[in-house]
Length: 256
Image 1: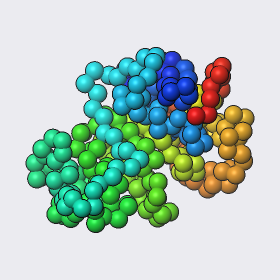
Image 2: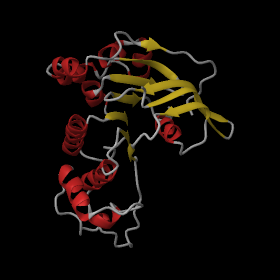
Image 3: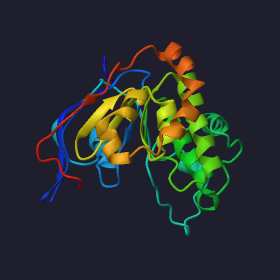
Image 4: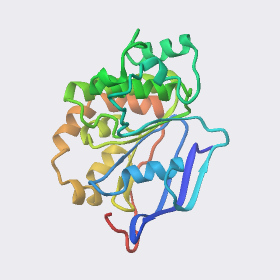
C-alpha cells in the first residue's frame, strides 16, 4: 500500500497556479527526491501533501500514517530561552529517556539543556530531525534540510538521514537543491516545474531532455563521482524503481 499519494493535485495562490495536476506517490521504504528550479513549487508540494496549504485534487495517506517532518526553516525567538529538551517535548510531552535517545541518534548526546538559540545551523537541523524521529515515522519528509549549511555539514546531515532510514526502514521524501547528492541517494527523482516534468531513476532522469532543459549538463561529473560505488549497493538493497523516465506534460503549467 502506498504511504502517501496525490492525484491531480493543484495549488493556486490568488491568480497564480503554483502546482497543476500533479500525480505523485511514495512507497514504503523508498527514497524519493523532488528537484526543480526556484519557484517550481517544491516546498508547496510537500505542504500540500501534509495538508498545510489548501489544494484541489486528491491526497490519500495510509490510515494512521506516522509522518516526521523537517521544515526548511523554523524561527525561534532568540529572546526566548528555549532549551533543546523542552523544544523536543512540544507539542507532546516526551520522557527524558526518549529525548536523550533521539538526541544521541542525531549526534547531539547530552544537549537537552542547551538553548535552541545557541545552536549552530547544523546542530539546529539535527534537533529538528530528532523531533521528527520521536514520531517513529513511517515516512520522513524533509524540505531542503541542508539549506544554509556548509559542505561538510551537508554531507554529514545526508549521511545521518541515510543511516536513520536504514535503521528505521522508513521512507524518505525530500526536496533538495543538492543535485549530486540527490542523484546518489535516491531511488526515484521527481523533476518539478509547476507540474511533473519527468520522473524515474536518478540515472535516467539526469539524461532526460526535460531535466537537462532545466539544469543543463553541469551535474554530470558530480553524478559520476557519487554514483560509481553507491549504485551496486542501492540496487541490491531496494530492487525497485522505474526502468525509464516518464515525461509529464500539463497544459498551462506555470512557474510560480
